[in-house]
Each structure stands twice: as C-alpha cells, then as structure tokens.
Image (cartoon, rainbow, N blue to C red; front, side, top):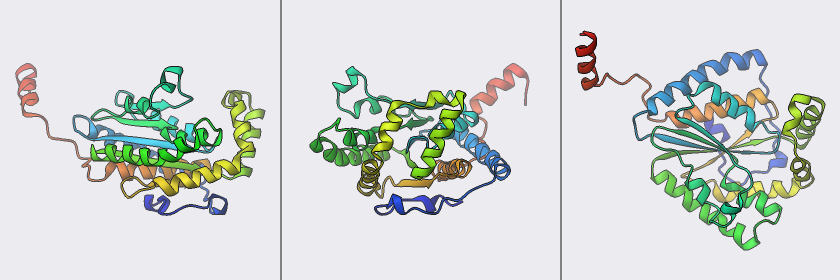
Length: 268
C-alpha cells in the first residue's frame, strides 16, 4: 500500500471513483500491528525534538473517521497525542476569525495532533448550509492556503486526508446504526439533512480539493467503503509522512543523565 497512490493532483470526480479495495479482517489485523508499532516509534522519536505533526481528517458522515481516531489512540501515548473533534463554533468563536480556534490548538514541539473535521468546514458545511456568504467561503480558499503555508514553513508536518464512501455504502451504515442500539448515539438529524444534499457536498468537496491540494500540502483521497482497507490506508499515509527523514533508532543516552545515574545507581 503506497501513500502516493492516494495523493490528489487534480480535481477529483467523486462519483466516478469505482475502485474500493477490500481487505479481510484477519489480514487487516496482521498488517495493523506493525504499522501501529511504527507509529509508536515515531511518536517516541519526536519527543524532545522540534518535530510535530498535524492531521486533518475529513470525510463523509459514517466514512470511518471515528474508527481511525480510536485506533490511533490505542497505539499512541496520550501525553503527546491530542485529538480535537471539531463541531459548530461557540458564540465566542463565531465572534472571532474562523481560523482562530485552530491556531490555539496547533501542536507543540514533540506533539501529534488530529483535527476530526477542521477549518475546511468553511468551504464545506458553511458553504452548503449557507452559514457563510459566497464572498466569505470563496475568499477562504486563499486564506486556508496561506494558513497552511505558514504551518508548513514552521516545520509542522501537515497531513490532510479525506475518507470517501459511496452513497449506497452510507445508506447501509445508516441502517446499521439504526438497528444497533450501541451505535445509535452516532446518528444525528444533521446526518440525514446532509444526505439529502449529497450532490451539493460532492461539488463542494471537489472544489475544495482542486483549490487546496497544493504542492506544500496535498490532499489524500482514501476510498473507504471497506473500513479495514480505509484504516490501513490512513495509517500507511501517516507513517510515510510522519517518518520522512526521522531516524527510528533510540537516541544515545544523554551524558549528563548517564553521569547522574552512575553517581546514584552505581551504574558504569
């Protein structure tokens, strides 16, 4: 599974995506463990260094964002791994520039941060639901590109992933959630309202990728009808981007630490 296979270089046609690979559960579980181990090593390699990473996770309702976040949480130490689920802005946030709440949550040195939905709400839900004027959301493409250019210039590893499923697969997952009591909490009125506007969202997503998949910060479009395949694809993308130029070998023991240990513990 090659991370480059998912990069968006030009405007996608979501309705034309027909290749949705599948992976058997046993194969998925076998392949997941070593990837999670690599992510753990990368997280440890970031500690005490200027390295930091930011994941923007977008996708259709029911596309599997929550499953990806949970499995990242199982692998990574929460002391330097943060997840921010992004919902509608508060009254205070609405009075500010829409990017301000994201500036305040950017990763510190050594951290990995995930935004479960993001500033792209400006050109998706706010556009489709007319929560932003046409002038505002059209201007946002330039603002977002400039914002991301600043993040990359500050050596933040920015990874933007969109989980794509078909309309039929979304219906199947809606039905599964309705039929399974422990999953019903995931359903909201907005899920069904958004479904009725699928075509509008489809155009908005394609516009978003065309305008903001730049050389500095490309989008990755993951076909996710099969949840195991989608998760492995995301993890492969993350290990590729997080690990570029990062040595995984343990760093040598700090001489001062070794000296202190030798005095206290009588260790040579």
